[in-house]
Image 1 (cartoon, chains in turn yellow, green):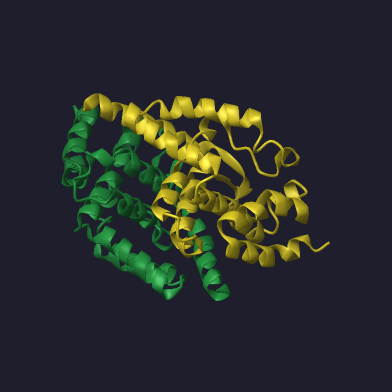
Image 2: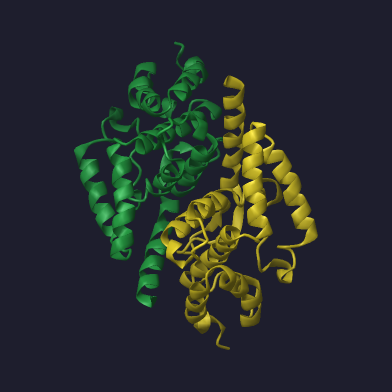
Length: 195
Length: 195
């Protein structure tokens, strides 16, 4: 029991470092960059509040768990912004390999049964093939859009993003998991890409 | 649909402010104070990882949802540290009244059905009368203890906390929801209160 608890707390203390990983996106009021810990909390809240946007085969409680875990690998790898490196870095093979090594280390801190369970949930999110993962990914794309809208453009300005790039990097993923949200995003973002 | 989404996003954008509410407790490495948004994320992860400490009547997915919501009222009221004002401020009638007004305003941003559902979950947490809420409260007490241990004493030093005060303000609540965790905490904290 004591060894098991020691492993559980070693993981929970290590996870604390996610609060120091900075994202490209700022808070809604643009006062500072968001960190990946508070971002993960916000996304879990997104899942609770936007559950009515999910298809009937989506289990929101699994989505919430995925979103709580989804960025832990950034403790080792850092955040790779969607729009950085002309949109090519985020889903590159190099990033995937580094994240897999990070998952080995971080989930490996847990007791083996629990580490395997949490890692499987993270891999399901990454693979984006199940309804739960597709909806979780859609929310992960919607939230920075809302922050960019509120803060006057945010990372779209930083990275010179065009309407077509927003569509291919963000819109398509939102559409897969939450079609009505994608229409909403299109309406709300129109003004930023009118030129 | 559009009005409903507008209300959902108004709430989600307002919730962003929780990332700017600072707690007395620091991060594990003591580099800065923790904010209540990232704290809520960390607690949701605590619930996932320490689920085996919950009694058989606890539904962990409800605990996770409670923990995601539990500090939202701090957007208006701020964090009231457990050990501040000689331990008297945290559960005072004034604090409870202010938090209830904050809940009116913040959950009131949501569509009425959803606002009522989330507020009920927050009130259940506050009342600490159901197994889910009692376990959630226990985790909310354990996490700052772990941070104080890692950072060399933390708020126990700030507020001159004695072993008896730690027991009455923290130990008792952990014991109610997670008895084995309380024994663990007693073992780990002994060295800090030996004089």
